[in-house]
Image 1 (cartoon, rainbow, N blue to C red):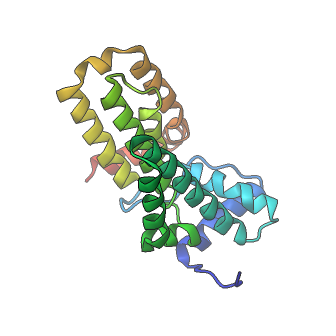
Image 2 (image 1 turned 60 degrees about the vertical axis):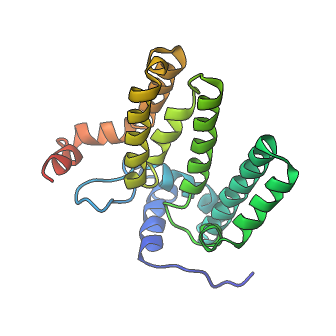
Length: 212
């Protein structure tokens, strides 16, 4: 592998935040900023990126390995899901399409906080399908959506609203199940850092959203 890889402003921002966590021991309650001034994503991206950075003693190549691992996970999940739905041939074709997809290739070789969404969206589609097929709300559906707010808030908001609207219109009975309520409780845990940040900073993000 070459020592050359894309490293721009966003990557520099992320690595500085990771440096504060790994080497300066300053934990954070927020992640990268969004397109809305004063609104931040969850911090999980920084903590996830901190793991390979710590292992490789600060070498940015750790982030590339993390992206590759996430992309391989997408391929594995997609393969076995397509094999379950159809057959090995369909699963193999899916792997081939992922392998030649420019977006998938970029996600495997470019450190960027929205790229883990490939895995989360794949898992979301799988869980949503299982929910519809089995007529039973899947425990991890809403926690997966909550995790998306740590990587790409705009898409996470859209998926959340569409899922909620669908549930209210077509699957209202799911909203009364134990799995749904337990899933919401699990989801709320992923928002604890942002909630603490809001309490400590006079509801900065809430005010920014309301001022739109």
